[in-house]
Image (tube, rainbow, N blue to C red; front, side, top):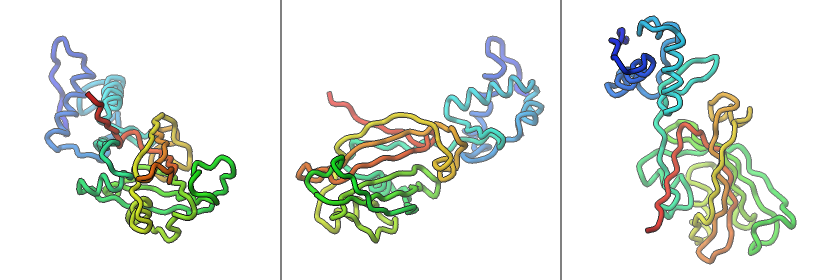
Amino acid sequence: MPGRVPKQPGTARYRQVAEDLIARVGRSELVPGQRLEPEAQLARQYGVNRLTMRRALEELSRAGLVRTEHGVGSFIAVPATRHRIDDGEASLSESMARRGIVVRHRVLAITEADLGVDTPFADFPGAAVRFRFVRYLEEEPWSIGEVLVPASLAPLDWVGGASVFAVITARHGLSVRRAERAFSAGPAGPDEAGWLDVPVGSALLELRGINTDQHGRVVARVAHHIRGDRAEYVVRLPG
């Protein structure tokens, strides 16, 4: 339990409280995922008013150290997982597994998609198949995504062990590669919020792109909505 933080001249009171909470995380007195006491109770423990306490929590929230769910409470944030998008892997699943992080998928739907003239798969005529799933890292929901692939390549018996691309590689002898990625931000709708365990309107990272094989043929179109508090994408620039 925290005690009253001595006043430090020249340092705002809310920042002193925030720094003490950070120090408690560093000492493992508070751990990722732990729910903090209610704001009023924390204010009494620190000997500050609720406005000061709220500002301290807002400061930590902006820094990504605290996650606040309105009507639920504030939690010590789970550290973001860094993911290199130029590591040569076709899927985050393989990237994370190589680092010893347990990845699993919950398959939500496998459906046929008739794309017509809008098909991105010029080298694979015919229908396509859409895979929709939730991806978990170390049993925590990380993203909800869709992968669209030509029907001739689609593993219709996919149950979410390895990634869709790992199965395609094994069955068809293709080397699937990331070819293009675009990132944007957007709010979580009711469906995404439910699966990702976040409030409606929470910030999500939206990733869209295509994958190709070793011959340069487009073999997948991907779209993922990723929890903004758990993901950090990294790319190494040339030079």
